[in-house]
Length: 128
Image (cartoon, rainbow, N blue to C red; front, side, top):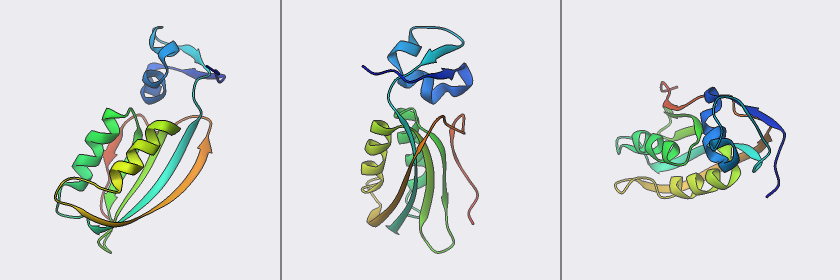
């Protein structure tokens, strides 16, 4: 497995937990595991009033991802998510379905590579 030169602390929990090498150590370690990425999502359809945001938080935490999710006044849900690229791909696939009562019609994705995550958790943000 290729390793990337990155320093993780306990505050970089999403990165730290996603690397099996890092997980074996305590406090601060060097990590060179899978590349990190960020994706901004805009989700269309029946996605408000169906527990989409709360379900997204649960899924993101399950996948060790960080960032935020919020409702937009236009009826869409938007999210900015960061973490290991493979986990982000699983999250995006989940977003295309959402919780059982949601009816997702479209998901716009904007991907970018990042050196490290900017958030320490995944949370619900205020509606804009």
